[in-house]
Image 1 (cartoon, rainbow, N blue to C red):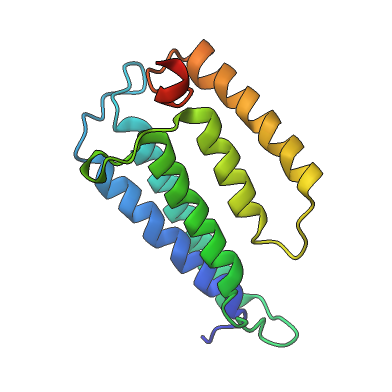
Image 2 (tube, one colour):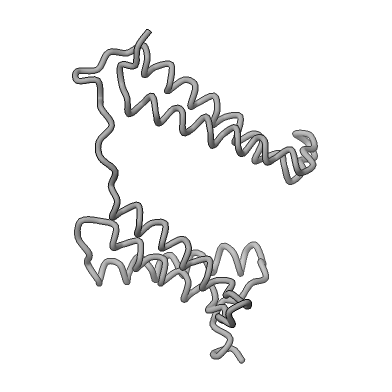
Length: 162
């Protein structure tokens, strides 16, 4: 039994690794029951489902014929760099870094930074479209996390709010 689709095979393996990691990490929290879910219930369920999905995809990659073996292409370094950088900058701007006295800039500024940096990962960058996307994401995030869920983290930079 050989690999008939490299892309599906490695995608399935990745899903299984991430699923196992989630399920394993969930064991550090109380799982609870279906009626009284603990904080580890959802990550455990998600991990198990991802692992099953990965196993199905991996199995399919060894059974279903593809035309050219569906080879894995070269690494896309530019998108990889910008997506990772966008997430790191988002975390840094949202929470700040007190050890080097970098202040927290809050949710709204962090979302704009995330969106503009991640937009550079694509083939073309359209400022107006990215600005509209960032604004919609900022409004929806504010409504979801601050208004509805009442999470307590800075929305605006400290030098604006005082």
